Length: 187
Image (cartoon, rainbow, N blue to C red; front, top):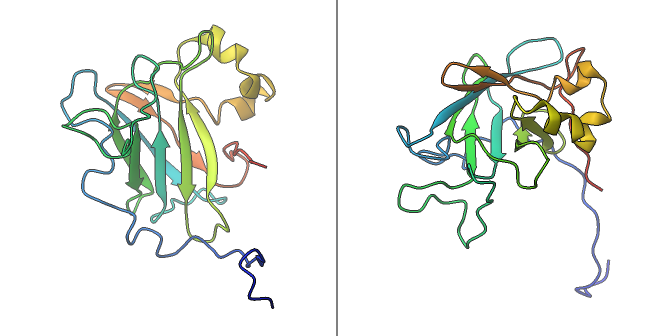
Protein backbone atom coordinates (compact mmCIF):
# COMPACT_ATOMS: atom_id res chain seq x y z
CA UNK A 1 0.00 0.00 0.00
CA UNK A 2 1.30 3.44 -0.92
CA UNK A 3 1.83 6.24 1.55
CA UNK A 4 0.83 8.71 -1.14
CA UNK A 5 -2.18 10.74 0.15
CA UNK A 6 -4.03 10.54 -3.17
CA UNK A 7 -4.29 6.74 -2.96
CA UNK A 8 -7.64 5.80 -1.52
CA UNK A 9 -8.79 2.27 -0.75
CA UNK A 10 -12.43 1.23 -0.43
CA UNK A 11 -13.63 -0.16 2.86
CA UNK A 12 -16.37 -2.69 3.46
CA UNK A 13 -19.89 -1.54 4.31
CA UNK A 14 -20.81 -1.78 7.97
CA UNK A 15 -24.30 -2.19 9.35
CA UNK A 16 -25.98 0.92 10.74
CA UNK A 17 -26.87 -0.54 14.14
CA UNK A 18 -27.75 -1.73 16.63
CA UNK A 19 -26.31 1.24 18.53
CA UNK A 20 -26.91 4.00 15.99
CA UNK A 21 -29.05 6.03 18.38
CA UNK A 22 -26.12 6.61 20.75
CA UNK A 23 -24.71 10.02 19.95
CA UNK A 24 -27.36 10.84 17.34
CA UNK A 25 -30.02 12.18 19.65
CA UNK A 26 -30.12 15.57 21.28
CA UNK A 27 -32.81 17.23 23.39
CA UNK A 28 -35.69 18.40 21.22
CA UNK A 29 -34.42 16.75 18.05
CA UNK A 30 -37.96 15.67 17.14
CA UNK A 31 -39.20 19.28 17.22
CA UNK A 32 -38.76 21.06 13.88
CA UNK A 33 -40.72 23.88 15.54
CA UNK A 34 -41.44 24.32 19.23
CA UNK A 35 -44.61 22.67 20.53
CA UNK A 36 -47.44 25.21 20.46
CA UNK A 37 -45.98 27.26 17.59
CA UNK A 38 -48.44 28.80 15.16
CA UNK A 39 -49.29 26.18 12.54
CA UNK A 40 -47.54 23.35 14.42
CA UNK A 41 -48.71 19.83 13.54
CA UNK A 42 -47.61 16.32 14.36
CA UNK A 43 -46.05 14.00 11.78
CA UNK A 44 -46.11 10.50 13.21
CA UNK A 45 -46.05 6.85 12.26
CA UNK A 46 -44.44 3.49 12.86
CA UNK A 47 -41.49 1.67 11.34
CA UNK A 48 -42.09 -2.01 10.48
CA UNK A 49 -39.78 -4.78 9.29
CA UNK A 50 -40.59 -7.21 6.46
CA UNK A 51 -42.71 -9.42 8.72
CA UNK A 52 -44.81 -6.45 9.88
CA UNK A 53 -43.12 -6.34 13.29
CA UNK A 54 -42.40 -2.94 14.81
CA UNK A 55 -38.75 -1.82 14.73
CA UNK A 56 -38.06 -0.48 18.24
CA UNK A 57 -34.68 1.13 17.62
CA UNK A 58 -34.83 2.95 14.29
CA UNK A 59 -34.03 6.63 13.80
CA UNK A 60 -35.99 8.76 11.33
CA UNK A 61 -34.69 12.09 10.05
CA UNK A 62 -36.72 14.62 8.10
CA UNK A 63 -35.72 17.68 6.11
CA UNK A 64 -38.36 20.04 4.82
CA UNK A 65 -39.36 23.42 3.49
CA UNK A 66 -41.37 25.79 5.64
CA UNK A 67 -44.99 26.82 5.02
CA UNK A 68 -43.82 29.22 2.27
CA UNK A 69 -41.72 26.64 0.40
CA UNK A 70 -38.42 28.04 1.69
CA UNK A 71 -35.71 25.56 2.66
CA UNK A 72 -33.43 26.88 5.42
CA UNK A 73 -30.00 27.50 3.93
CA UNK A 74 -28.27 29.65 6.51
CA UNK A 75 -25.15 28.37 8.22
CA UNK A 76 -26.09 26.16 11.16
CA UNK A 77 -29.56 25.61 9.70
CA UNK A 78 -29.91 22.26 11.48
CA UNK A 79 -30.07 24.07 14.81
CA UNK A 80 -33.27 25.92 15.61
CA UNK A 81 -32.49 29.58 16.14
CA UNK A 82 -34.40 31.57 18.75
CA UNK A 83 -37.18 28.99 18.93
CA UNK A 84 -37.99 29.13 15.21
CA UNK A 85 -38.21 26.70 12.32
CA UNK A 86 -35.14 24.50 11.70
CA UNK A 87 -36.20 22.46 8.65
CA UNK A 88 -34.64 19.35 10.25
CA UNK A 89 -35.80 16.81 12.80
CA UNK A 90 -34.65 13.46 14.18
CA UNK A 91 -36.87 11.00 16.07
CA UNK A 92 -35.97 7.60 17.48
CA UNK A 93 -38.70 4.95 17.50
CA UNK A 94 -40.03 3.63 20.79
CA UNK A 95 -40.68 -0.01 21.75
CA UNK A 96 -43.70 -0.08 19.40
CA UNK A 97 -41.73 1.37 16.47
CA UNK A 98 -43.49 4.74 16.89
CA UNK A 99 -41.88 8.04 15.81
CA UNK A 100 -43.24 11.58 16.09
CA UNK A 101 -42.24 15.07 15.02
CA UNK A 102 -43.64 18.50 15.86
CA UNK A 103 -43.37 20.43 12.63
CA UNK A 104 -45.18 22.55 10.04
CA UNK A 105 -46.92 21.39 6.89
CA UNK A 106 -44.35 22.23 4.21
CA UNK A 107 -45.25 24.09 1.04
CA UNK A 108 -43.97 23.03 -2.36
CA UNK A 109 -40.56 24.39 -3.30
CA UNK A 110 -41.58 24.73 -6.97
CA UNK A 111 -44.89 25.85 -8.50
CA UNK A 112 -47.06 22.91 -9.55
CA UNK A 113 -45.04 20.38 -7.54
CA UNK A 114 -46.26 18.61 -4.42
CA UNK A 115 -44.93 19.36 -0.96
CA UNK A 116 -42.99 16.60 0.79
CA UNK A 117 -40.66 15.71 3.63
CA UNK A 118 -37.27 14.24 2.65
CA UNK A 119 -36.69 11.24 4.93
CA UNK A 120 -33.68 9.19 6.02
CA UNK A 121 -34.16 5.89 7.88
CA UNK A 122 -31.46 4.34 10.07
CA UNK A 123 -32.10 0.88 11.51
CA UNK A 124 -30.16 -2.13 12.71
CA UNK A 125 -29.10 -4.50 9.99
CA UNK A 126 -29.12 -1.88 7.23
CA UNK A 127 -25.85 -1.55 5.32
CA UNK A 128 -26.58 2.11 4.64
CA UNK A 129 -29.16 4.75 5.32
CA UNK A 130 -32.44 4.48 3.39
CA UNK A 131 -33.85 7.59 1.69
CA UNK A 132 -37.50 8.18 0.88
CA UNK A 133 -40.13 10.91 0.85
CA UNK A 134 -43.36 11.52 2.68
CA UNK A 135 -45.68 13.54 0.44
CA UNK A 136 -48.31 15.88 1.88
CA UNK A 137 -51.81 14.76 0.84
CA UNK A 138 -54.50 17.00 -0.59
CA UNK A 139 -53.23 18.57 -3.81
CA UNK A 140 -54.10 15.77 -6.24
CA UNK A 141 -53.08 17.79 -9.30
CA UNK A 142 -49.58 18.42 -7.92
CA UNK A 143 -49.26 14.82 -6.68
CA UNK A 144 -50.29 13.56 -10.11
CA UNK A 145 -47.67 15.72 -11.85
CA UNK A 146 -44.74 14.57 -9.71
CA UNK A 147 -42.34 12.50 -11.88
CA UNK A 148 -41.55 10.02 -9.10
CA UNK A 149 -45.17 9.40 -8.14
CA UNK A 150 -46.30 9.27 -11.78
CA UNK A 151 -43.81 6.44 -12.43
CA UNK A 152 -45.33 4.25 -9.70
CA UNK A 153 -48.37 2.00 -9.57
CA UNK A 154 -51.18 3.25 -7.28
CA UNK A 155 -50.19 0.65 -4.66
CA UNK A 156 -46.53 1.74 -4.63
CA UNK A 157 -47.50 5.44 -4.75
CA UNK A 158 -49.55 4.94 -1.58
CA UNK A 159 -46.36 4.03 0.32
CA UNK A 160 -45.17 7.63 -0.10
CA UNK A 161 -48.27 9.74 0.61
CA UNK A 162 -49.19 10.54 4.21
CA UNK A 163 -52.73 10.44 5.59
CA UNK A 164 -54.36 13.46 7.18
CA UNK A 165 -55.34 12.85 10.80
CA UNK A 166 -56.55 15.12 13.58
CA UNK A 167 -53.64 17.36 14.49
CA UNK A 168 -51.41 16.51 11.55
CA UNK A 169 -50.17 13.70 9.32
CA UNK A 170 -49.66 9.97 9.75
CA UNK A 171 -47.27 7.81 7.73
CA UNK A 172 -45.89 4.33 8.37
CA UNK A 173 -42.58 3.13 6.93
CA UNK A 174 -42.21 -0.53 5.92
CA UNK A 175 -38.59 -1.62 5.44
CA UNK A 176 -39.45 -4.74 3.40
CA UNK A 177 -42.29 -6.99 2.40
CA UNK A 178 -45.58 -6.65 0.60
CA UNK A 179 -46.14 -3.06 1.79
CA UNK A 180 -42.49 -1.95 1.45
CA UNK A 181 -42.03 1.80 1.25
CA UNK A 182 -40.50 3.08 -1.99
CA UNK A 183 -36.88 3.97 -1.25
CA UNK A 184 -34.70 6.18 -3.43
CA UNK A 185 -31.29 5.21 -4.80
CA UNK A 186 -28.67 7.88 -5.41
CA UNK A 187 -25.85 7.32 -7.86
